[in-house]
Amino acid sequence: MKILAIEASGPVAGCALIEDDILRAEYSIQDKMKHSRTLVPMMEEIRSRLELDLQEIDAIAVTKGPGSFTGLRIGAATAKGLGLALEKPVIPVPTVDCIAWNLYGTDSLVCPLMDARRQQVYTGIYECRESLRVLLPQRAAALTEIADRINALERRVIFLGDGVPVNREALEEKMRVPYSFAPAHLSRQKPGTLADLAMRLYREQGEACLVSADDFRPEYLRQSQAERERGDKRSYSLVDTDQNK
Amino acid sequence: MESNQETVTILAIESSCDETAASVVVNGRQVLSNVISSQIDIHTLYGGVVPEIASRKHTERINQVIRKALSEAGKTLGGMDAIAVTYGPGLVGPLLIGVSAAKALSFGTGIPLIGVHHIEGHISANYIAAPDLEPPFVCLVVSGGHTHLVLVRDYGEYEILGRTQDDAAGEAFDKVAREIGLGYPGGPKIDKVSALGNPEAIRFPRGKVDGSRYDFSFSGMKSAVLNYLNTAKMKGEQICVEDVAASFQAAVVDVLVSHAMWAIDEYGLDKFALAGGVAANTALRTAMRAECEKRGTAFYCPPPILCTDNAAMIGSAAYYEYIRGVRSGYDLNAIPGLRLGQR
Image (cartoon, rainbow over all chains, first blue to last red; front, side, top):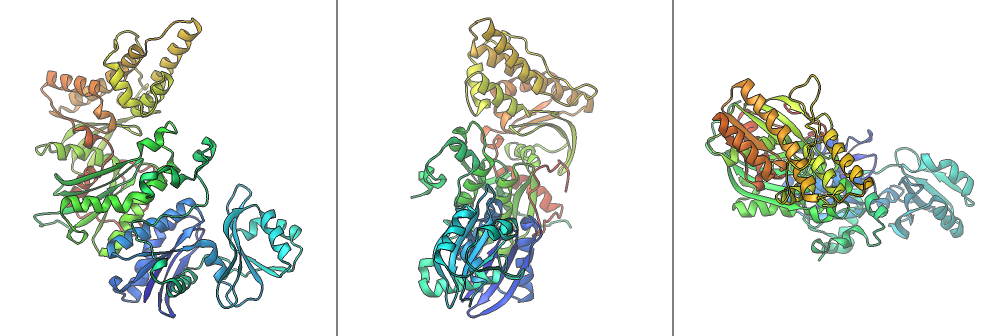
């Protein structure tokens, strides 16, 4: 089983190739928002270095959201285009779950924080002992809300992700349980982690975790500004009934 | 690099604004399929194109649109000689969907990638509509986002004679239509009600740009309409929507036609082509055709389906790039402000 993983949901653009239990290649760059220019060249680098026949790929993993709207779409459109070219399915993986899985093996709670602007973070609460256990599924939330929830659990916590620097001072003020911040090499979206998590999903769920490349769409967890201002109570995707049968 | 291939089949993708489109085109002129998925119903709710919503819609529909273009053409992806995509100008979010998908298709299949300029696409729509048309000719590209008077010297060789200094012509139509209560999209609505009005009822100014004969300015004309409406309102006068629409449209058409004719006269060319969404406007087509006939200039204008944003025109432009040996890399990016002739 070979999975090509595509990551573009946040500040990191990258890709990875996992073959069963072996991560054959991982390539990522964090350089502002240049994903459109860097993503496919990195994929090509992996293909040529591994002399990979792309037809051998069984599925394409991609972080499905939340994240930067534009970044998510660059990842999604790339995964969809490749899925169409190869006639292979997509394994969508929740972005925040992927960041959490960087901290495999810890006894602490794991709390990824992605900067979601508008005084919010994309976050969730996880345990990462032997497998990923979701205590609070990914969502957009105020920092206070997530701090309160963790304080109530009365357990040590590790924060990580690109939302840490912007919220560090506020966290230091709010946290009532022991906490720490992950080091730089773990505190980001890692394509290799995405690849491993996708492989695990496939082993646990089989075909249930697969989505056709045609049907795959990102989960933004937020409406567009225009919809918010228009006061659209329904979520965006529900408005468009013909696409959502 | 020159190509000796007899048949070049190109899959083209266009997503620069609010139409998700794909097409299969042979040798730049023969359209095997031309699939356009419009989002106009959604954007009408907001009175104009919302880039974030357009980007989301493109993402949802892109694969289906591409598959439909291939199946209607009776082709498979593997049968393509190149994959072409609009990479600018346009809205960056929407552009990125087509560009990302096209790059992935090219990467996944090994089929060469060609980035295409959206305006070059509009101009090339004329090659599809008129198999005999060859450069050089003068082309006026008018749409919701662009107003360019272009000298097409050769395939892929363009000289911009004039462009708008403020609003695009189609944008001015949209704004005026909103003010007189016709709603979005303004172009087709003004076109329709103008047929019932008197184009000489109100004399709106013909916008010009000092020191730049071929450039356009539409914001002053738009303001003149707003002033007229305000004055009428303050005086408590009833306005005739049909007359305002017809008079405004006449002013815009006058400016577009006179600029185009100056260019034809100055450069002594015997061919003129219209292109872009506003080229579907009845009054503009009629006036332009009449003026061309007076001069003995051949008049070209694509049918409305090729005037609106579509991918067939991108496939046509891409063919001429292909035979010149142009290929894009996997680092092709969306460039919202891409200039004509820029590579």
